[in-house]
Image: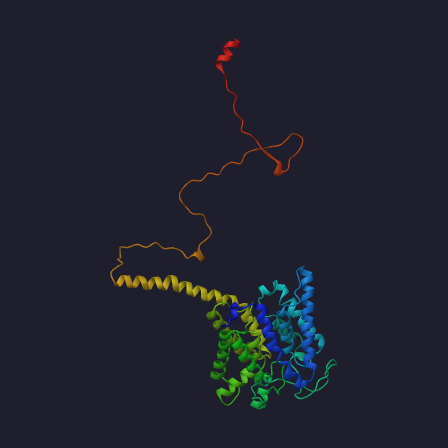
Length: 396
């Protein structure tokens, strides 16, 4: 029996996801040469080096075998154009680890997805390098700067309200301008199914997010002649499908309860579509993911409060109602009201007794020198001298 994602070891989980994501490099190399491989290698190496530097600065042990760092580095490379300068690829790796991981205290304290932070930063600061992609079919130089023709992505044309000119087969096979790993739609679908079978990603979060996006795009289509084509274009454009499969179910950020993960996926899909309808910005998935990551822990709290309220109030009301119908409860009966444990304040019990504090014994010190606090002696109690009347009479 396969263990669910929330109960698996995060290190093994990240290692499996790293292997699955690395498979996307195969069609990228066939389509654009070894330049995509070089960009991803720069991101991974810079992530590991930045992690080592941050561990030295924080004076903690560096784990060179941490698969999460390599996974985040590869994820940063997959979300970039193949023609991006290597300097920006290294900068994204530094931001990913320094701001995404160590600034919050490490893997166990993640608040946002580290690759989403890095990619969102580059989209805002370097849109010309992040949102313009090489022409499909051109072989890019491995290390020198690309000087060929740049084009825009399918998501850009959809934001303008125009239907993409590429055929359905070209979009599925990745023969469209886009990021290194986000355009291979058919390969991502196959990998997503394998990850679901292997329990390397969350089934509830993935399905709920896809359902939310599909429902909104079918009810309110932006492009396409039919709701089905609108759903296809929305799911196959931008970072959406890649992000849902690889980035949405971060083991350290994903809610623990199943109902909370359903809410997480629905809110993520809704936020992405609101960005696309009203934001008009490319790569909106990373911005939506950052917003939903900030609310991830709140979804668990909401579900726990609903379950607690249902267990303590709804069940109690139904039981009292049944007993009242059977004649077991009268209007003259009284019932003690107890506050829930989570709302009780840390106050001492009130019993009506007057409590007196014991006085501390006086401390004495030797004349001429001050004793330390831990060497001070307690002053013994003084007793009044006793008077012997017989001795006084004999003296007289």
